[in-house]
Image 1: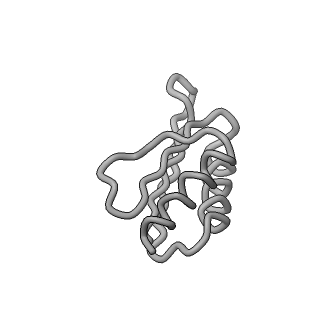
Image 2: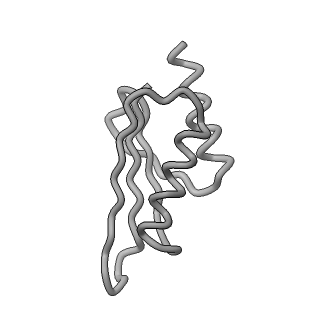
Length: 80
């Protein structure tokens, strides 16, 4: 399944940064989680994370590790 990730620092920061990533063949939520954490390190601590899975038209905001894993696992289950 294809997953797109967008990590942005909060608006109003001195420097605005965005981390964009697209993963073509995701098989586990661990892969997505690792990529999200890579983005958070690139952007900084105060950030907003959004993901889009498969054929989703919109990005969805996720906050916690449990939300990320749950969202991706749910979508992977639908792809099978």
